[in-house]
Image (cartoon, rainbow, N blue to C red; front, side, top):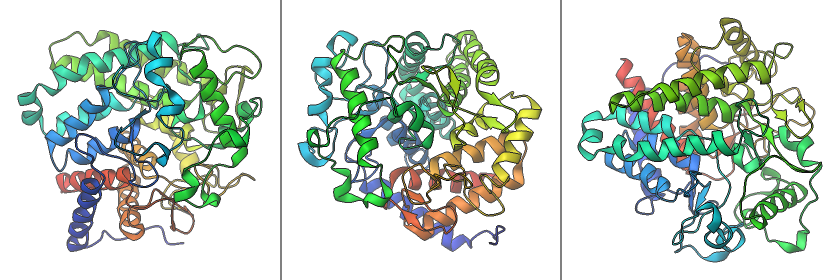
Length: 450
């Protein structure tokens, strides 16, 4: 396939910008934005962080409000829940919904909000990075509203929660306790740890996702049953955190999650400096995470970071895009950066040779599936993160090519949720919020570089 493409004409990019704005406006619910009106009709945690990046190029006030609305549902223990439920949405529109999570009751001891229903698990901590970039996009507007001053204590509490409650391996890295927490819900990285989990009976739940999407694009019923079982067990223990207990416990150190935590710790340090606060805590956290990532999850034989199954005390051998996301972390050893770039552009991910967007999973693995949720498709948000990582380490040509590919894909697929990395075909739902949002950010940054 041809992998070098001339930039689209200015008129086409202007049309793309207008279309992306329409998507974000159509998905707005007032103070928040849903990923998709049909498939995901509530506010999702890391989705809103990416949405804020796009809104910052449209309306700084709306971008700030997007993050503040999410943080307004923060629990007293510091966790930021992965879903904030909209009470106006019918109960059966999404599963698992508020009747399943029962956060205000089951999570009362952990400090769940009493008047807002949420889920009880979390998602990748990209929020401080998003808040910093929202501020940087319009610093005067941010300063006028005291944006950083308001969100900084909440973001600091969020990071402290993860450090205090989720270091299940005892090495400074955060463990996810459910595949949904990693954001890459259906990744093959979870197959081994999940295989120990007894699934919930199929008759005990109804999958609303299959009403709006093809079963071929979504997790299998068996995997979904295991997701439900894990979530129900966490709910039934009052959302209390603690070391993984028993052979079926799910606790995984995910390199992408921890890389985003490290990058956000760097952003928190910048926010603290801007506010006249001491950035030392956040600098130390970022440095410790960088060291632990390299010591604990780096696999030189595979040229990338791998997940670690904490319960089994072993690395997970699957090659996923999550193992490339540490490119976002400043200060990696040069040999690690070179190896990550070689892996990204080599036969397992094919960027610049067989693909224009990085797939979510190893192209050469037997379980690769270019259509099924996180088992191969390319996603706009992970490729946006890779674009920033490549640019950070001076790989400008590849970063430019990846940015152009993201914009071309958004235009060609109607802002698809994800795409087949080999054919470019859009998969999942259309008019997906973060696809439109990262397109707006990329368009604005390209204009700034000219």
